[in-house]
Structures are given as structure tokens and as C-alpha cells.
Image 1 (cartoon, one colour):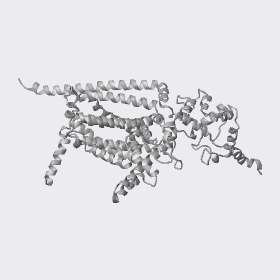
Image 2 (spheres, one colour):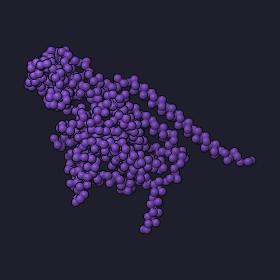
Image 3 (cartoon, chains in turn red, brown):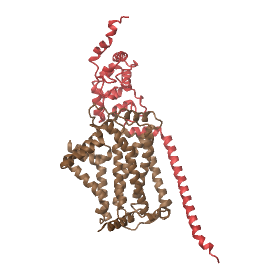
Image 4 (cartoon, one colour):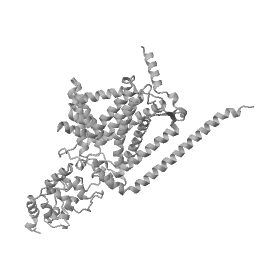
Length: 207
Length: 366
């Protein structure tokens, strides 16, 4: 069976079409680093921490035919809610494109600090209790549960686990209370034994 | 002095330091008393360090069931523990927090023991074993840091091992080669890799635990045989029974420490104190990311190392190690007031370098 020459060339055509736009957008990375004072890298939105260019897994040079097709579809998702799943973006990167659409996202390159304000306020992809928008502002990873502003994480986890903490507190207090009684019991028993030993020679002395 | 006299002196010296005739229930428990005075809180810190060690052993054993000490799987296995294993994130987080709390309490224990002159005759060997325990604890911290095999772990270990090699530049003749050989023995290959990870893992889970059990055993027996040191110059307010009064108070302190540790383990991931790129798997081809530094308990030597010539730090560290080991003899005639001032100064230095070391570094280096 002969293959259609156009179909065979499709991956090359897609790559050529994307060549000019296959880079990450360092404006956002710079803006986040500046506002948060934290070091961030491309892994905040991309699969690979060095961004989309290259041949490593998660980068353009490593994509299969199906992934290239998906990437092409993602590249033209100019309006929000297109349900794209770009293979070079992680779940948060795709969430940005699906929430804003590529058109609005590209416009934000002029004012990259605004990106966090445009994201849905109630979205928390890693479930750590801090919204994705706040994580973006703080330069913490929206997909890593253990990464977040320490005080915010502490507050969120404390309120989420207050029941378990109170149970553990009760168990600790009761355990200590029991131990206290046990040790006092040992002490009293030992003293009684000593008293008996001290009394024994006196009692056994014949009158 | 002939051999017989030397032997006799040694026997007498050891008999005074290890009065084995007191090794019975009556002396070590029943009749043991603890002085009550203004610095008595210091008596609880050593027990606290031991509590954190027990937590480390328990959580470390749990982590051992899942951790893979290979460069290809180490990071993935740590991620698996955190994300897939039931309560894995809690166990790992408690292990991380308890390691810091253990090192912190060992440091405070050293300072309080120094301020209370707890190294006085016949407790010299108790002090020396305490200093050895501090070294072993730092060893646990240094070797454990590499095991998750992430960017900060591998790069910080590389810097630490390079520093050992640089010592050779200050040693004369053939001795100049020794630090390089030590580094190669620890590293196991040309660069930090599988051999290094295997060695650090073996040291962390076999060598150091065996060492700590031996030295801690001696330390604890010695403490129990001699009882608590007097601690202050003035007469103690009163004496309280070790069993059960002091022991119960000690257990209550352990209970509070356990709750603090549990709340930290549940609510505050240790990793949240660092930026996330540092916790990505180590990439040998990638560049060294910003923000690489050792754990906080090495800041007191790390930031001066960044600011001052290496020889100053080496000389300072060597003098410090010798002074610490020889403290019972160097400070045997120093009064407690002076010792307290020295301990407070050392504590302030440790605190300032730990909290503000980075700011001080930027102040001088721009």
C-alpha cells in the first residue's frame, strides 16, 4: 500500500510550522522570579525543566507522530476551553492554555505579571490548599503538593488535618497519663518491698 | 614510671570514670537524685536528643523498606514514598524534621553541658563521648542529605567533597595527597555517582548507626553511673528523685516534642523551605542551579568558608575540634560564670550564622 506523500511529510511540516514558536516564554519566568524572589525554571509549566526545545523526553525533538499532532492542535487553541493536552506542557501549562486560550496568553507576554490574576481563582491542581494563581505569584510549583509558601502550607494543612492532630494529642496525653500511673505504681511497689525487707529482721527477732 | 605503674594508673583512672560497682538498680534508679536549680532545664536536652534519635531509627527503618540506593531509582523511590506509600509523606517529613531537631538539640545539649561544667572530673569521658556523638550526628546529616539524589543534594555533596580535596594544598610533602585519597575513598569514583551513593547509603544506615550505638551506650552508662552533674556553683534549691519524678518530667518533654514533630510532619513539608527546582532529580548534564547550599546546621562553617580563605576555616575547625575534645582539661579550672559567657557567645554565633548567614554573606560580597 502506498502512503500519501503529504501524510508522510506531516510531522516535518508541523515541526517547520512550529519552528518559530516552539520556545518557552521566558517573560513569565522572569516576572515570577522577580515578584517572588525565588528561583523558578521551565518545569513550572513545561514537561522538561529546560523548556520545549531539545531531544529529551517532553521536548519537541522527542515527540511521536501522535504527540506532534496533539502539539499542533494545542498551538492553534486560541480560544479558552479547547481541552488541549500539549505533550510539551505539564498539567499546569495545559491548564493555563485551556483557561485563557493561546490568544489571551500571548497578549499577556507584554504584562506577564498579570497572568496570575487571569487564572481561575478556585483552581488548586495539587490540592495543597493554596490556589494555582497564588502559587504562581509566590513562585511555588502548582503541581507539587510539598511546595508552597511555608506559612500558607502550614495553615492549610493544619485546618485540613485538625481532627487527626487533636486525636493524636488526646492519645499522647492519655498515654502519658497512663505511664505516670504505671511508674508511680512501680515506685510504690518498690518502696513497699523495701519497707517489708526492712521490717523483716525486726519481726523475726524472738521476744 | 614502669609498665606496671602505668597499668595501675590507667586502671585507677578508668575505675574512677567507670565506677562499675554502682551498676545496680539501687544506685542507677532507686537512689539517684537530680538537682533542681535555674539551669535544670538543661538536664532534659540530652534526653530530647535521644528521643529524636529513636524517631530517626523508627522512621528510617520504614523508609528503608522502599528506598532504592541507585542513581537511576533513588529519586523516583523517594517520590514513590511521598506520593504512593500510605503515610509515606508523613514518615519522610517526620524523618527530615527530626534530623534537624536532633542536631539542634545535640548542639544545645553541648552548650548547656559546657555552661554547667558537666565535664568536670570524673565526667571527662562522658564529655568526650558527647563530642564524638556530635560528630556522628553531623555525619548522619551529611550522608543522609545525598540519598534523595536531587539537584541540591548532589551538588552540595560535590562542594563538600571538593573542600576536603582542597585541604591538600595546605599540607606539606606527601601529606598533601592524603585529603585527595580520603575524598576518593568517600566518593568511590571520579565524580559523585553510583559508588558515592552506595557508600553514603552504607555509611548512613550501617556504619554510623553501629558507631552511635557503641558511643551512645558508653555515654548513657557513664551518665547513669555518675548521676547528673551539679550544674551550678550555688547549692541546688532541692534534690528530686530520678525515678519516677524526673523520668516522668522527661517523658512529658518527650510527649511535647512528639506533638511538635507530628504537627510539623503533618502541616509543614520540609521541602517547602527550598525552591522546587532544587528538588528535581539530579541531571549530570545540566548546569548547577542557583541556591545550592548545605543544610542549615552547616551554615556556621559554610558562610565563613565562602567569605574567608580556606586555610583560616581549616585552622579554626581544627582548633575547635581539639578544644572540644580537650575541654575537660583546658577548662578544668575555669569558673562556671566564665563558661556560661563562652557558651552564650557560641550560641549567639550559631544562631546568627544560621538565621542571617546568607545576609551577612551578601553584605560582604554584594
